[in-house]
Image 1 (cartoon, one colour):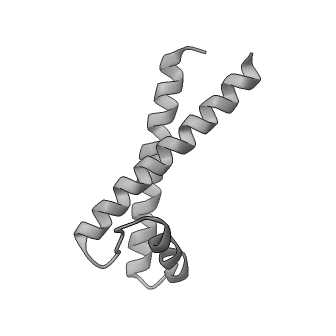
Image 2 (cartoon, helix red, strand yellow):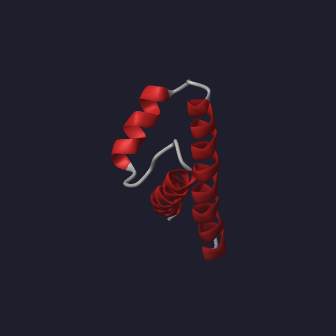
Length: 82
């Protein structure tokens, strides 16, 4: 597999993680997944689901988290393909 595939995979996991994060925040606004969001608040520094600035910080953290996950997935795929 080419390097381009791995770059796309890493970027896709970052974006997908952001989308899932925003869905979870919208569910929090409807009083669903409150305990999970409180757990995420402890992990993502600056994240606050009650204001826009806190949500933006959370989205940035989610993107970074997704990039790290994508790198790990790409590394595992590369190991098994060799």
